[in-house]
Image (cartoon, rainbow, N blue to C red; front, side):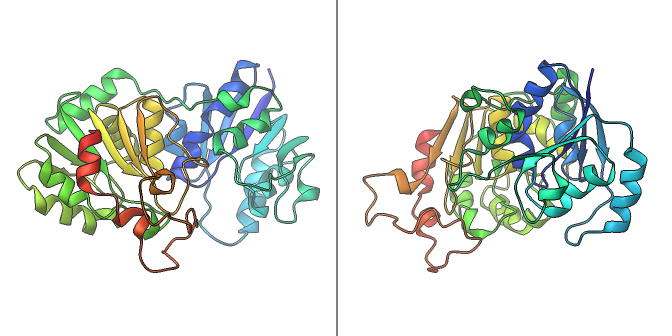
Length: 325
């Protein structure tokens, strides 16, 4: 059985979208170890095909060559192949320093000599699941969909700890690490319109916005942003009646668990990072022929609206989302 090292992406949503690739590699007999940054590592613990997760001691920015060289030395002789999922130079360094004989990845920033098997980056932005699955070298990747699994007792225990029952609440994931051009501004209005219990999930950065939302319906909102471990947030999303989110990591988590959801897109595109679930409803004004004037500026893929109006999200009303729920 060949041993393979997976160099994981640094974003939660991207990590979820790599699951079909890992499922393909496992199905053909590869024993998978995933190397991931600490905040992404829990995603891979929800993938049963992963044998081991190694948390990398790296930080954002810089090559941190000394740390990579030290870890590479520790990993020498353990792996037959490495799959480098990010496109950066530093992500390809570790498999090279570990002297892994087969190193597969996309051509990226000056890393021709670091990879032994190189795929050309597509000119247009492709669907990301297929982008990752293509590293397997197998056909049929267009139909791939991510799936996550948590043991039922884990979900039940998390829900009980918060006084919740499966299917008895709605999750809002109002944050977006990428920037404000992905954040729908009307969650507070939607919270005031719903009668169900609402659970707010997100990181510590999302707390101020979540507290504003909670103030609109204080008797029905459970504000858990910044207060849960990532796998507990997964359990809360998995047990929800519905999830409402921006284009974010938790959107992909909800899709992978098959939870009914409304996914709100602004500066990004559901053609590139869609929630791959039959139970997902996508709202993107770019694709709405009734919306005038047309959003010729979308998708811009910018963190902040370059034109300053944020129409792509501001003009999606709470009533529209409520109707979908």
